[in-house]
Image 1 (cartoon, rainbow, N blue to C red):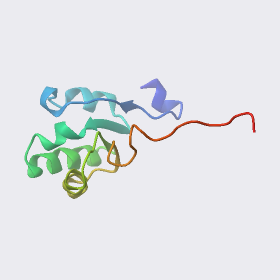
Image 2 (image 1 turned 90 degrees about the vertical axis):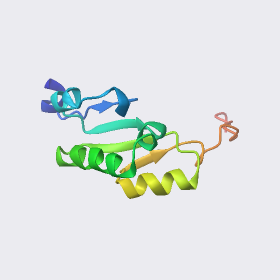
Image 3 (image 1 turned 90 degrees about the horizontal axis):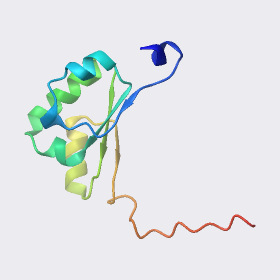
Image 4 (image 1 turned 60 degrees about the horizontal axis):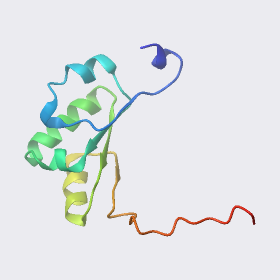
Length: 102
């Protein structure tokens, strides 16, 4: 990929395990893959861990998104995810108002 040659990193977002055979990721060689937590949690812990290990062997890091409980976080950390996000960490109700005027 030209992007990698230019020093850019590729992120594949919203990747569903159920829809993959792995060929697309092998061709893209992304630096990061963003996977919905529910997709990782829909398979056995062993399957999730194996899938993540295969990505790590290619130099790809895994971002689990949409984590909503500590139980989900623990299971996904055990499976080997590298990064995570979700409402469990930042509520949608968080006040995001800023005073840019000083």
